[in-house]
Length: 157
Image (cartoon, rainbow, N blue to C red; front, side, top):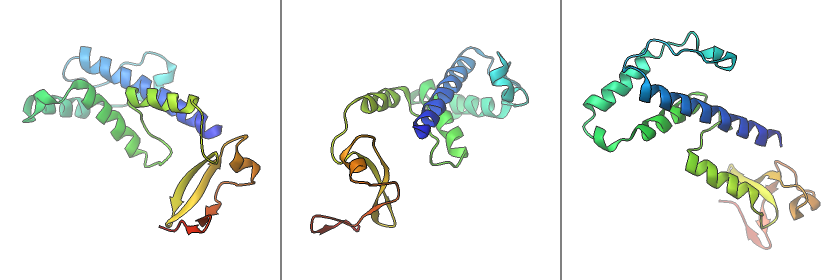
């Protein structure tokens, strides 16, 4: 539940940042030395100098050989993706609006199978988290458990 709250919070922050970037790039002068602060929540941007960022966007729009095929939206999403990549945190990321909608739909749907999020570690299938009130939880599976075989079939690799 905590991870879900963090994910939703991250998505909300990315969405607000994305809208701010879009509006700024759409309606601001081509060269901006600072971003005006709208409220206390954006206080962290007061000392940020975005002139290099805006200059890079200007160069892309004016000199990139295929600039007419790159939309403002693609540049916006790329910038947001890059900001999250800079965190070097596997639990932080940005969903583009269409992907975020699909993600929300997937979460609101029903789950099948044993009822556990699984991943791989060192070639083994590992339980990331059993879902509440599912066969995985009732069987006592916990995060970190390795699934070594299913029936008589090894899962390694």
